[in-house]
Length: 161
Image (cartoon, rainbow, N blue to C red):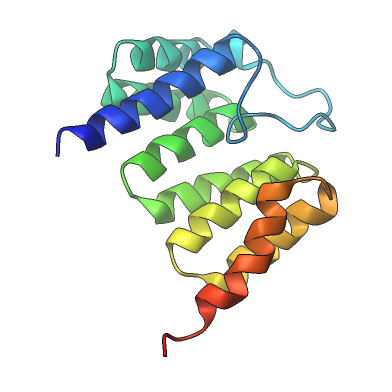
């Protein structure tokens, strides 16, 4: 049982570290097609959330992300990171809502649609997950994760025999 919180922490810590280095990961990587997006580093609550994650304070990070979003509702990186935290808590509905907001803020981001598909898949909303994964493949035909989901989801939606 001890391994689950450690795994969640490491996932979030790696995401925070990569984001702070400007490299991103699929969940946090902004679309290269996004235009004039706000700089998350200019939001003090967002940077505080990253610091909290580095200190293994997931609840504190969540509180800082909530404040960052309240100050700047257009900060897609804050929604994406909060979605990651919700996924780690197995709060898939909240994660899906945050990832859906990222797709509204970055509609041309294949990764945003892929992350939404993953959260919808966890909710067993196979039709919505298929639509989101299909949108991701349309935006980025080279995205192998999205292509795999598009192929896999119809098989998951079938009842077990």
